[in-house]
Image (cartoon, rainbow over all chains, first blue to last red; front, top):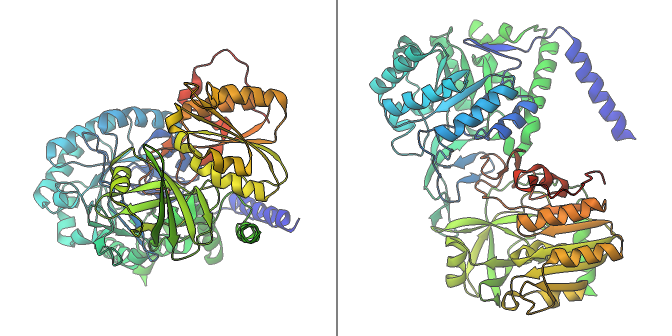
Length: 324
Length: 287
């Protein structure tokens, strides 16, 4: 009985918030989001049905798994380790390849109302363009270039460390369509002078940060745990790093929308990220602990925070700490 | 008797909910192999002593990690204070390695129990049905249910008599029926044939099934026609084991075997592609 009353209370609270004048919608370049939570790339975004589940769970936008020209099996297990303070993964860009995924994306665009950002990967300019064209054909609302996957040779970081190539990719993608182009960067390439070159090339937004390169060794067996040995670190332990990167990017480019990603586990974390300058927040490995209810939990918490502080819209406090 | 009271204690340790809270997986649990039994030419049973209590639910699974070789999901075939049993069939790289190299005394690494198990009930009339190495989770489940005063009937099927195993074990806890396709042992035919007979004779509260999906679909159809609740344990390629990579998704539903399962309500199988070829039978999904 007590539980039932508690639940009722819960519903009343939501209802009250829902009807109040608090606006939690936000925008990323041309995309309008019903709330600032974005499914981060690499998490669950490899099929229509998974994307639909996350959309139904309350996300504001979805980023697909990084799609490459050919299907990729990914690495042998173990590919993911829970460290307690964070997670280390080297899944190896496992994805169905652009041809199979085009079908999934077309279906997703038909039945899912929220924006879908396609994360695209490649090892050359041609591959990026090939994948991007197919994805736009299938209805992708925006593109996110994966410049920062920490653990696949020839992809991600290896592309991202070639500034000229990246500039070219951005210019080409901007020339083939009017869809916004975002770049997913990591701590290893957050140099502001480099980002300036990308912005000059036409970049519409930045996703920061991708996982940080890491290693974990099991001392019982004297061996690294991940089959790939090196992996990407995510989770609560990288949040302060992500916040610092977002803070610096916003300070330098206040007009470039940022998706703040890295260690967001609660609405408080999301608020911190927005205060540092993010227009939206990426949710990834938090799903391990909280599962898909994390999206609703964050939007509810955001409304409560805004009510407490008297903010009427998210825009009022994006980058607030820069105004002191 | 002692075993019985420790099992009761173990049951009490398990929360009743279907969704156990996520347990932090910050390190692997070390186990030492203390007994290996060859059950059939391709299936072995491994008994391991663990360094700590893990109290799995029947139907949950763990990941067995062999450094430099790989990591595979395994259902718990039995568990009682620190001792765990697995049934491992030689099918891929890791299982072949295990069959050839893991000996008594070898140390192995396991993750804590993952996923959602079977719904546990007490004093009910239940059927366990399975085939091949799908029997593993059913044995642990059967043991727990029989401690819970459930009346059990076990139906197990195999291709031929050389592949038959675990009949004595199941006979100790339940009324057991065996089938082989060539008739070498028990009934000649499949478990589905036995199930049809069994369901005709008596009514049951719940049916638990594990095995090939084709067989599971048939079990679900038989049960739902009779309006009997049925739970199935499903298999997919499991990568992260924690519900974030999407590798084990059941299409077109987007359910993750490692996180939402591996045990699901059987009616779900009627919504997946494989079972859509209808044989003209009227199926009622309501229980």
